[in-house]
Image (cartoon, rainbow, N blue to C red; front, top):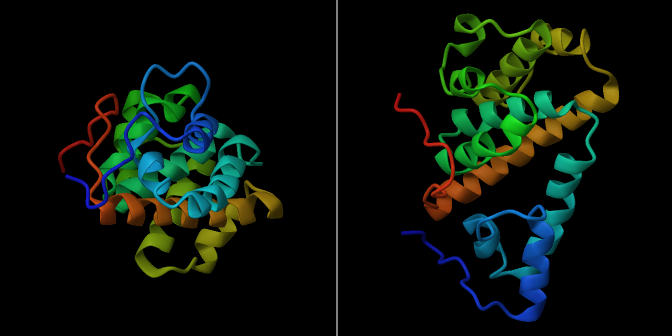
Length: 186
């Protein structure tokens, strides 16, 4: 049971409108529990929407690269909720295969899965940030070999944002969405 209960329908008109903005058109399920909890503080939710939507819909990183970063950050953070929601939807839409998605949950994925060099660089960078909150020079250099400065900045914000989302979902004890991909047992 989540620590703060998500809102349930019927929603006040302003919340209903805001929740519809957070979900893609034609989605066959209720807005995410995370969104419904956040809207217990509509002002905070509104501020978070701007950055989240910007990273997902207007970023400079290719969608596949973005989803690898999100999957690895949420996996390393033990956030089954967010990992499963992305694995079921945006990761697959971006072209991340089932084995690739599962590989993001393995600690040794950088060496045990045949990632393309730029994807391996992203995974190594996420791991370094997760473990030390820093990027050693060789890890940074590997990123620089594949990405421009604007993309590198976006990568850092994206990784930090999904660490924040992981803290939020884990801290709230949000249960995985019923339609999400179950987090693999370790």
